[in-house]
Image 1 (cartoon, rainbow, N blue to C red):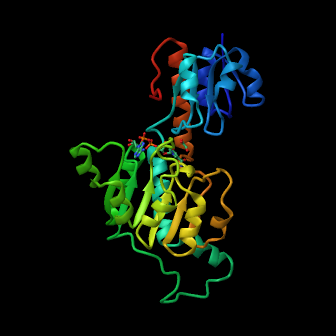
Image 2: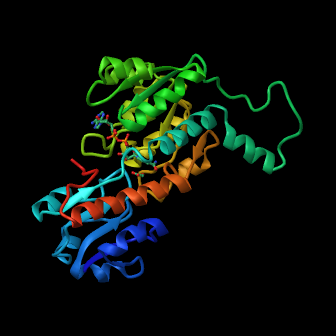
Image 3: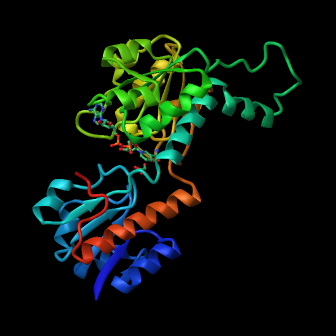
Amino acid sequence: MARIVCTFALPAEAADLLRPLGEVAGPDGWRGELADAEALVCVLTDRVDAELLAVAPNLRIVANAVAGYEHVDREACRARGVVVTNTPDVLTDATADVAFALILGTLRGVSSAERSLRGGGFGGWRFDGYLGADLAGRTLGIYGMGRIGQAVARRAAPFGMRVIYHSRSRLDPSAEAETGARWVAWDELLSSSDVLSLHAPLTPDTRHVLDRNALRRMRRGAFLINTARGPLVDEAALVDALRDGHLAGAGLDVYERDPVVHPGLLELPNVMLLPHIGSATTETRHRMAMLAARNVEAVLSGQPPLTPVS
Ligand SMILES: NC(=O)C1=CN([C@@H]2O[C@H](COP(=O)(O)OP(=O)(O)OC[C@H]3O[C@@H](n4cnc5c(N)ncnc54)[C@H](O)[C@@H]3O)[C@@H](O)[C@H]2O)C=CC1
Ligand SMILES: O=CC(=O)O
């Protein structure tokens, strides 16, 4: 019987799928179970590197139960013939919903208004109280027009937003028409977006793509939304741009040193901060676990994985 090691508590249905394939070990003490493991089911807080692979010589698959895979050393896996999979698509809508919640919440100051009320600051309706910004008529810029980027674009049109995007590759004309989004160069994305939403993976090319210089090239009074990965943004430079009013606000689900949040962000009123909840719905997490389990099932039975990481 194969040994399948899981680093987190698998939902029951996914565990049921795996049990006929082998003994399921973990999450307690999962590192100690790797010696004869053939499959590892893990998430983004588990670093899978050459050191880990060295103590798991029988490993055939790393079934990553999230979309991002920057925490997996794919080259080391390839060198040892270990298949790497992730869980795209099944979390697209949930994550796009959170990006849109951040867009709405940040432009309308939802978090700070609620904090004010809870702190006793609501003294009754005022003509000039709690003023935010309209979504309608504003331009949403999307960086990384993949699954989640396109799902965010589709949500923006009914709110009356114009959508522009910049991505490594351009959508085909029918997808552009369906999402209502127009391709622009990186510089134009920075200078023309009233709201810039990040949806590219973390790679050597995208790390600090929003560095101090790029943040300064963003439109004055713009908002930054990040549900992709924290290190896409130079967080210290973001704090400065928010403090001096160059940017009007930010909505963040991810952090440069996740889970540590820059203290400057915690002090700013015009920032909405979420604890990395993009895919955190019961239904979505169930689908993610099932897809990871099905990838294990496929590889352990000699079939191609359903969602390999290219
Ligand atoms: N906050 C959360 O809980 C979640 C965060 N994520 C993050 O969102 C990211 C995107 O997810 P998906 O849309 O499913 O991935 P995807 O692979 O469908 O889309 C990524 C897009 O980024 C583009 N891209 C890649 N490198 C680029 C570059 N250097 N410059 C411009 N564009 C580039 C790709 O061409 C692609 O269109 C994931 O990699 C993950 O880091 C995903 C799920 C949940
Ligand atoms: O951040 C979450 C993911 O699925 O990637």
